[in-house]
Length: 173
Image 1 (tube, rainbow, N blue to C red):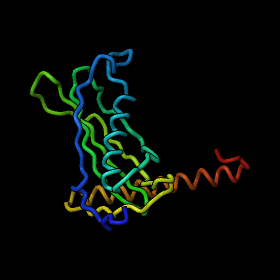
Image 2 (image 1 turned 180 degrees about the horizontal axis):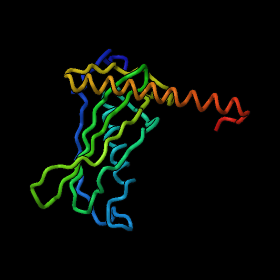
Image 3 (image 1 turned 135 degrees about the vertical axis):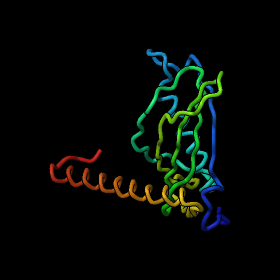
């Protein structure tokens, strides 16, 4: 891993995955469990993070994920993931989820978007440096700017929670 590049373009580790949903993945309403979709999101994002960082990376957080439309049995769900932002040892991976029917030619619908933070780790589980992501297009630069906004919100929320606990004498959990 000492030979890892100092930077890597966004396009170098972008990944797409498609999954045909099945009956055993449904909830009581007959739609696909949100947890099934979230598991696939974490899996595809994890591969992108590992490829970008050149080794193991662990999920540190997932920002809010809002399902816009339900996924049904027989839908082909598509996951498109890329690194949006990098820090010293962490990176944000964005995943766009779309779906279409398995038995027809129809436009894909946007199911959800998710943003996950991964930390690259060494053999002892300690954080290790990652190559900086280099956005190449206007769209990638927009995604990087928005990732920086999400990061500042995550850090501010974390600090506010710490301060609230300290002010109330609560123990951190």
